[in-house]
Length: 171
Image 1: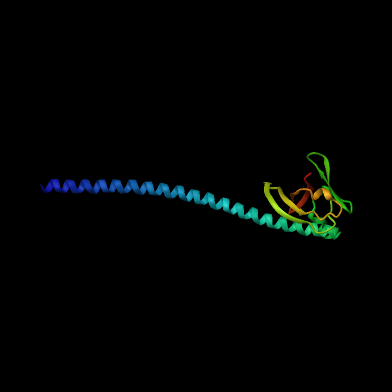
Image 2: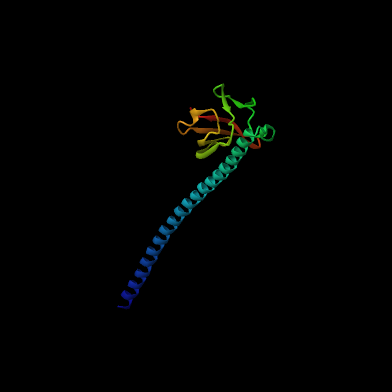
């Protein structure tokens, strides 16, 4: 009887160990999967934070640039523009290299009231931002008050800094 009892005890200990090892292995696999998911989430979160910081930086630059344009202070903001633009006094002409078309942006007469609708980093060197125009700032342009238009802004990273490559109003 003693041998049977010892055998049963050893069998129970062995089964308990097998059961424990199985569940520990299963738990380790689940922990590994959760750590992988957490790392992916952290990377996505870091990218989102970087994009949001870039959005804030470029949004601020655009507002300063537009206010300086309205005040005809071209010297202060000249470095904010990519090489494809030409100042004409009352407007800026952007030459789009891809399409070889010129887009003219008429500088507003007074403050322009914008609300950002969308933004995205298209590539490492290209960012777009779309704003609703709540008040266009144009004195004699009734076409911009008929409906909500958008101001579309494209930025290009040029060596060391972001530059405005185009500003256009959808028509």
